[in-house]
Image (tube, rainbow, N blue to C red):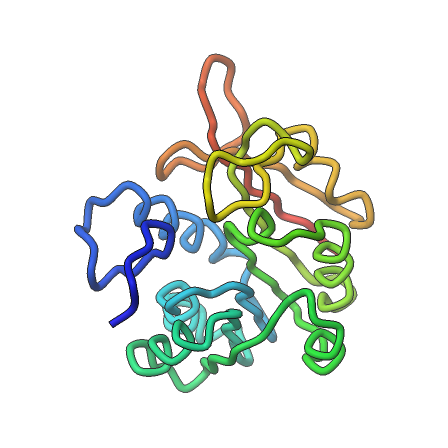
Length: 203
């Protein structure tokens, strides 16, 4: 059994109405129309999202690779979430050797990942390198005081502002920015508080 740190989402050990779980599941449902070809779920956690996409998008994908830096988490994923189109492997998105050996992907999902890495520019460069021409990247992160301010979370290096988030995607040819509040992911509406951003970008 994996340690419940309060940050990791483990659906089989959580109440079905847990707010954190619902937020995470909503992002995978939101991503479904964009999922095709060879798919990467980077920082896949225990694998429930990658498994969901493998099942729901089996007719539009070639394979899904779920990658997480934590070996114990990947072992949990392998034992709990099987699909013939799905493979789980341990890997580090900041490691040049891993990125260069992974090939390119038609779709990449990276939900609640970038705030966990110390080098934003390297992370985004690797995302661009891993994405095939014309491919789609879906990326989310919580908002906060900004890149140069310590995060209140012990698990995050920072929590960027909405403007910093939108500025991440200058190298992409098409960018759509959405905002998330609970299970709702939408273009921003006046007077609505959005604690998270979700970007859909094409190379």
